[in-house]
Figure 1 (cartoon, one colour):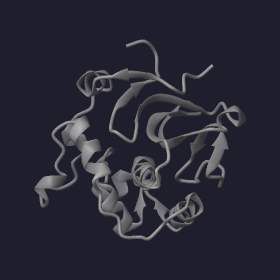
Figure 2 (cartoon, one colour):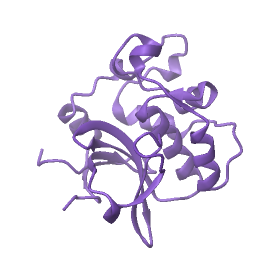
Figure 3 (cartoon, one colour):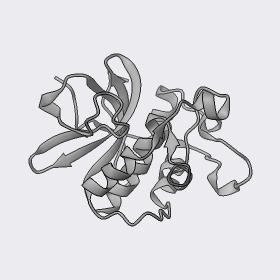
Length: 180
């Protein structure tokens, strides 16, 4: 059974476990406020994003995502892993799974929902999505729609998603994966 709640973990410890490098997430030196110093400051910055599209419901967020293009980082940046800031994703309307998920996470948190950006595995391969914690249960918000064309799954509906770590609406981090 998957641990969808996770265990709180200090961001510095998580950064060490997942071998995260802020340089991996950086995509340009033109805007100094966008250059991440740590996992924690990156996520705090994402939550401060000033997003322009006036979206007030989950359905409107999904409609926006349906109009976005999935594109691998290598194609756009010539590197395997680059994380777009949600403001830049909203303007470009293209990116890979973590870009879609970060934008959607910021939007859903802005609606007051209990949402987490989640990184983990989908059918054994690395992936990112948003996990929603609702009174009716935990749901996966598949922000790219690439996996089946659907955007929302109750956790009991699919075993394809395996959370490894997540960040909540307060930029607190959780470990879901194997014991660290």
